[in-house]
Amino acid sequence: MSYIVDRRLNAKNKSAVNRQRFLRRYRQHIKKAVAEAVTRRSITDIDKGEQISIPTRDISEPVFHHGRGGRVNNVLPGNKEFVQGDRIARPPGGAGGGGAGSGASDSGEGMDDFVFQITQEEFLDFMFEDLELPNMVKRQLAGNEAFKTRRAGISNEGNPGRINIVRSLRAANARRLALTGSKRRKLKQLEEQIEALEAVEPVLRDHAKLEALLTEAASLRSRISRVPWLDDFDIKYNLLVKQPIPRSKAVMFCLMDVSGSMNQATKDMAKRFFILLYLFLQRNYEYTEVVFIRHHTSAKEVDEQEFFYSRETGGTIVSSALKLMKEILHDRYPLSEWNVYGAQASDGDNWNDDSSTCYKLLMSDIMPKMQYYSYIEITPRNHQALWEEYEGVAEAYPDTFAMQQIVDVSDIYPVFRALFHKKTV
Image (tube, rainbow, N blue to C red; front, side, top):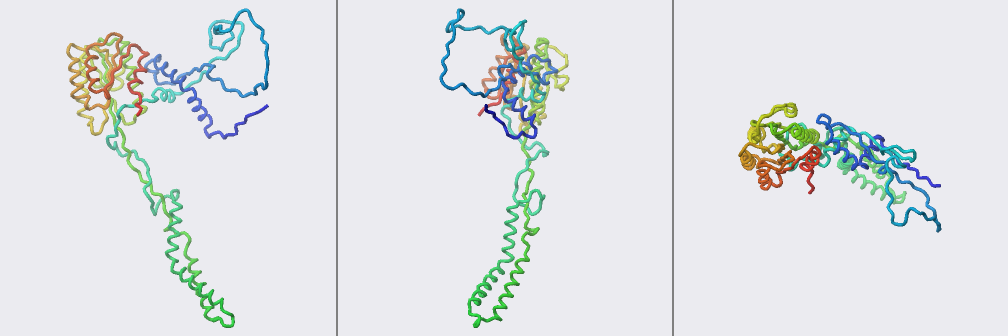
């Protein structure tokens, strides 16, 4: 019998590494469960963790074993029930099946589905995977509190931990050569003269001159040896400087229709969409501002609490929200510094000829300044005049204007992913 022993060392955070490997392996199951959870949850619980169930058949592990070798002849008895090509129906749940079935049975064994819990952070990671704000541009240096450290050459002063050993030894060697170069040349000449005198017969040798040369050579060696091998002046340090990081500043305008034509279910779907958008911005973009605008016959800029929970309602004039957006954009967000985005949710109902006014506002004043604008129409009915006018905007700005329709709650998350899916180059 053979054994396979894994002698690889475990990482320091063994359980964390194993969990990440597990999440990567069953990514498709988790993404499907996250999408279903977003649909069925209430607005207040949309960002919490989730319990994931994986079918037993998908977590089976490979088993190594010895196969039977050689040639084997088997004689199998026939049967009266089946012939070649018959299809056998799967047994019902609980009848010798794989667990998690329904109904009672007095026979059969199986295993329940594997169930585990993912955290809030992991849930949000899967929810917003492969999403981004389109056409983001780094406009300018947004403040000076974020820096990137980069190499900037060599310095004579610095932290001991940043000593450049190669440059320090090179400087020390250059200093020793500079200080002892002439002495070494002179010592070489003396050694040649000493060697020449020692080659002469002892009787003919000038012993006084030889002794003087030996004394001078010893003095030179002593002076050369007194030059330090490494001096403080030789030590060189890696110089690191902080460079400001250009950051993308963005503003997202959220325009929500709260008129009387929007019933409670429609408003709930609009709020769900904007909650997803708000969570996405807060989690993925640190320097992004959100401007909340509610409108019926008139538009008003509100805070987050009032945007999601106010019960104010009235008639429908969509252009009021676009006019307010235009004013805020002009007063507070210069295009030289900000990336501008917009998201609008409505049921498509609008007052008389106001849809054409919306078209003119978008074409002349808003879309030329936008990085990306998305319009979501929440209605099970046929499209109305507002959608038809916005189709003209989409034709004029195909890369920066997007339209989607939401019929029921199950469409919200797929539509959100379709609007903000990361573009591949």
